[in-house]
Figure 1 (cartoon, rainbow, N blue to C red):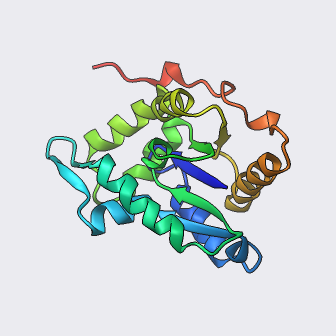
Figure 2 (tube, rainbow, N blue to C red):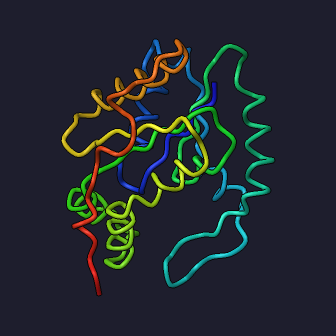
Length: 189
């Protein structure tokens, strides 16, 4: 099974995957593919948006490259593709990590490479459900986890619970999208 673990920057995707990669049980069960790392290290982008300080990924080249990475994962392992673009790739299900825009601002504000405008843009994208909406438009198996007040291991357990539930043919109802609403947090200019 191939799962996209996506969400606005700062929601916890990389940290969750680091725990899964290091956990004795999980690392034998799940192969992790870091989508952003592949885009940047292999220059799979068409250009850079200087104003927004972001790269524009070449999705066709990325899809081809990801297919090669998937073939490297040992047979029998499930694959978690991590990154804020992973939901745009062919996957069986999508898990969107979410965080309250105020908490997200605090998390992203600690990153040296994030300007005030970039922090604001990402907080607004989270409040507007941008990645969740894209995910729902692309896949019928979408789930969301609010990471705002959860500790890391609780988030990891939720991710694993969703994946294992899907594999058993169960719909993890508590994680179905539509329960999180932060629209009032959008900042208007």
